[in-house]
Amino acid sequence: MSLLEQLKFDKDGLIPCITQDAANGEVLMLAYMNATALENTLRTGKVHYYSRSRGKQWMKGESSGNTQQVREIRYDCDGDTLLIKVEQRGAACHTGRRSCFFTVADGDELRCDGEVDGATAAAYAQQDILDAVYHVIQDRRRNPSEKSYVHSLFTKGLDKILSKIGEEATETAVAGKGGDRDEVVYEVADLFFHTLVLLGYYDLPPERIYAELRRRFGMSGIEEKQSRKQ
Image (tube, rainbow, N blue to C red; front, top):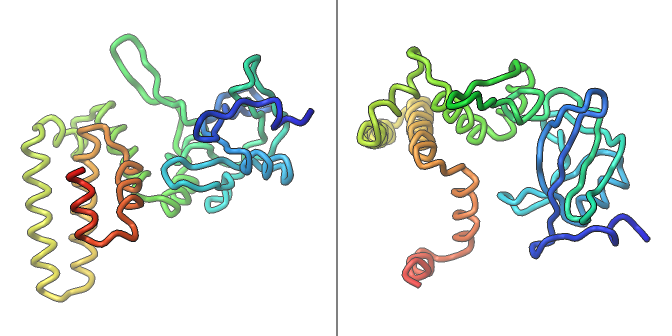
């Protein structure tokens, strides 16, 4: 009987996968696979996952170069979870850290453990900058520093965050009217950043926005408005 026949995929055809460093046993990340991702993992020896936010399969490191070479695949007694031991090239986490599990809960205090690899962080940022910025915002929120602008926004509360979004939206409109392309880029970047702070306030990851845009894709404006009333 094949590995696929031994496994229990959920109603969406997915199975969680814990990825572990084969050299030292460190847990690197948790992601999901569908049957195709697992088949490609077995065929190539490089770990493939299924992105629930993007709705598609992807190979770890396909953009960043931080690939995962399979050393061993196991599954649990119920057949509903995978454990894959890998040789990790570079960082596993999109923040540039070796492991995604870098936040330590020490009683009521939270702290970050592990250094960020600057080159790796840059590579991931190029791959998905909005997600990277969002995670930095959440890190600043949970690990406050007096020098952190993001922390100061959260300290001042929702009204301050909303006022900054309004301010940046106005400045974006003024830049658009002025016709300076560089200024438009600069102001839109500010607007995006402060919008991500708002998402952080409500613990809404950018994936939720991606999913909503996918839902709307191909709809007319009239159809989209009608769908919200249903």
